[in-house]
Length: 89
Image 1 (tube, rainbow, N blue to C red):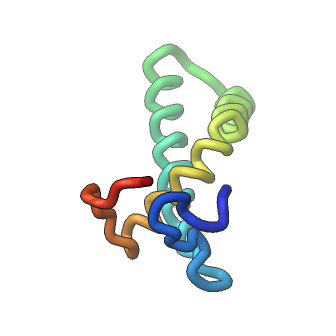
Image 2: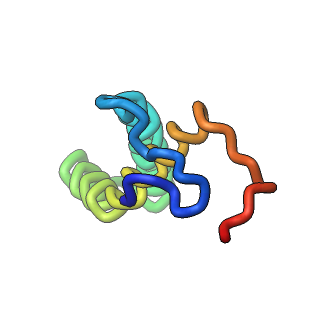
């Protein structure tokens, strides 16, 4: 991840520890993965705890890079206003 935006030079890490709040967003994503996996496995048959755990850990591991970025982007967008009128030069 870049240190600053290439267009407006907004720092992506305004202060040390800024992204601790993104952990809560990441937690919400993982809860959504859990719920979706639970519903999907419940619809397609009777699976045990081991199969459910393996499926959940696999999905969470595969989607970790996206979850990490999405949670940081959402956390930053809560506090930094996006202005579409700013054009990169």
